[in-house]
Amino acid sequence: MPSGVAQWISSVVQSCRKNGFVVTLFNRIRFLPHITSGRSDERHRAERQAVNSSIQGSAADVFKKSIVALDQAISSTFLADHPVNFASPCFAVDHRLDVLPVLQLHDEVIFEVRTEVLTEAAKLIKSVMESAVKLKAKLLVHMRAGPSWGEMKPLVI
Image (cartoon, rainbow, N blue to C red; front, side):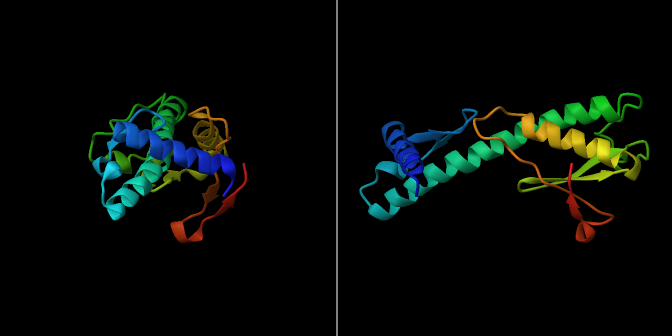
């Protein structure tokens, strides 16, 4: 394990021991009361949870920020001329929609996109998701496209 990673893990655990909680990149808090337990199994579980919560929670924060940014970008780019009521139960069958988010699955977002705007939509989605949050490391988005989920192939943008 690279020394920087080991140092970071140690600092997360030490901070959690001191405060009783960990904080994600966007300041969400998870309390871990067993971090100072006298029982080693409880303490070790809390230490793993502290590190995992910092990583997974921060990844979720970044993903949520990118989803909000995507909603704004797609709405302003593809829906500006025909507003849609997304609260309506029939918005999904509204054929005016060129780009429709249909599913969020773990760290993926699945869209239905009209073929005529696929390249434009893919460029927008990739750009927005890669730039929604500024980090030291560049976030990379991998795209796939196809007529069905099972037939998707990598899409190079």
